[in-house]
Length: 354
Image (tube, rainbow, N blue to C red; front, side, top):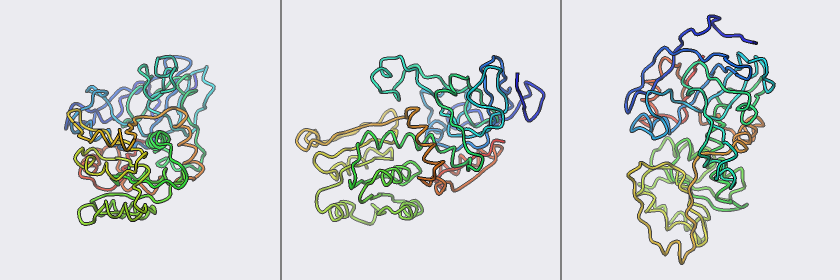
């Protein structure tokens, strides 16, 4: 067995942020995952980033995260221990890993809808902890080795970037397409960056919060304040009366969604990217779909191909995700970090776990 751990006492209890139910996040001592078989890999989490899903889970719960559970899934770290049969990585490698891998065998995987896999393999625990364990098979499917000079905070954003790549691919964005993004939170801004990388023409962003609107403008988008400006008129002027080719909804407010559906052109696409509360309902004119032939799409998750593609784009500096990172906290101050995120402070918030 090959193993190097920060504290050499195996099984020592280390700190993790444990979600106990809506509104309850406790720092607790937890048992470090151990190398128990020849194909085990132990990763020390260096950086974990707070995701919108973490916030939604903390505020109202989530069917996929049954408490008590360690949250966190956007992370990067260092391999510190491996079993004797591990070939995909070595001790000292800097890596990022997706929070799940698909089975490849279920109905949805066989249909090529890997992000809908019903038999996903998950990490040993969430990334708001000091260590995570995966298997050799998991690493073969999803682990990405990072160069020595990589910014680990940026590398941790491969997962949300992969989610956006999945959504924009589903929109089948063509060169010169006009895109309207509703919401300039972190995921809305990532949709701006990926749309631009794919060759979008005009990218318009609707966002009422001045700080986030400024961030969208700095990315090169046409930022609109829907509370003081006429978004419809701006869309019509920018698109020469056609309407946008693609409308990406990166918020969870159905009333706002209903108010902007008419801004997409006939034959265009609407992507419901943001996750909505379970009790949500959306009212729309069916003739929007029937006569205007607007396609209503949804997107959740990513494929391992898209995760690796996202990591490559970050490593190649083809997309600057680092500009979205606005705050940093140590793991011991994660509650303060969650408070900031809940109150829409900043954009991406990094938690230093080691």
